[in-house]
Image (tube, rainbow, N blue to C red):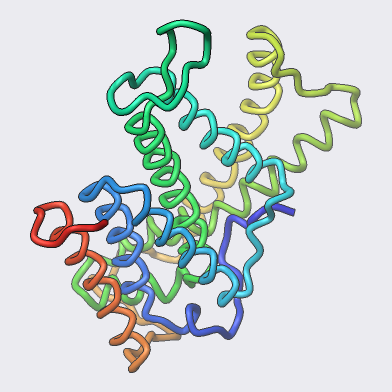
Amino acid sequence: MGPYLGFINRNTVLHRLDPVLKLVALCAVAVGVLIYSSWSVNALVLIVLIVMFRVAKTRIGLASKRVKFLLFFSIFLVLLQVLVTPNGTVLFYVLPGPALPVTTFGLERGLFLALRFLLIVFSSILFVSVTDPSLLAQGLTRLGVPYRYSFMLVVALRFLPLFESENQSVRLAQKSRGIEPDVRSLSGILRTVRYTFFPLLVSALSRVDSLAMSMDGRGFGFAKKRTFVRRSTWSTADTLFSALVFGYLIMCVLLASGFIGLY
């Protein structure tokens, strides 16, 4: 089993954190890796992220096809940068002669891009798995965001596991009819996309139509304000976590500006 693309209701420290703070932390990770381009810092943050998966009692699923694809794509990014970046000290040559040199700068840049990709993807998966969409909507509304826009985010987060389930159902239906996915040729890829995309599109449009009729029947958007059954509260853990998040951002800014050096 791969990582579940949806909220997993557990009673952990990460689940009890303020949902808006977790959204800010997700944005901070993305901004931090863009501000300071260092593979060593990204590797350290990735290790912390893996520990957070353990704390949240959420499995990454290294043996799943989805995660294997992410890891293989990361390795592809490293190899691509190594082969196309001639700058830096040459470590060795892939082919005899001066062709295709493997340099230190190319290796560092490849590791940086691969780790940046993994950080953004895995941090997004962790955010979705530990954040209750209803509490996130309440937190955003509390900050002044119109509840219509916060509800759009809730719908997006709620539909992720539904689309994943629909995708699995479509694949099982294809397999029962003897249709196997083929990614060895362009025609096979197009055929696989056709047999997968159109059923998912029809299912998505059907669910959206049902949701729109349900919202219209319940008078969604009629009132300027709305009430919430559950509300998130700020705790000491939120204060400590916010200090860590902003400390990480400040560190990235200082490293990028050269005020502090990393050796």
